Length: 67
Image (cartoon, rainbow, N blue to C red; front, side, top):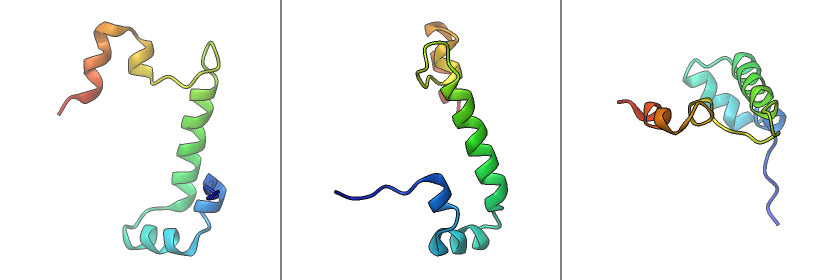
């Protein structure tokens, strides 16, 4: 069985950090933002992760894909 990396493991992986550095991405900021999103998703009314645009109602579902 293949082990999937956790967020913490990804943010210290040398290859990921190299790519982030090349793209001028701050690993600390990415980690904070992803943790915040995870926290918001896990605090749903029924404990399920539902995107905000979907939870708002079926009529607003198309708004997620504006180009």
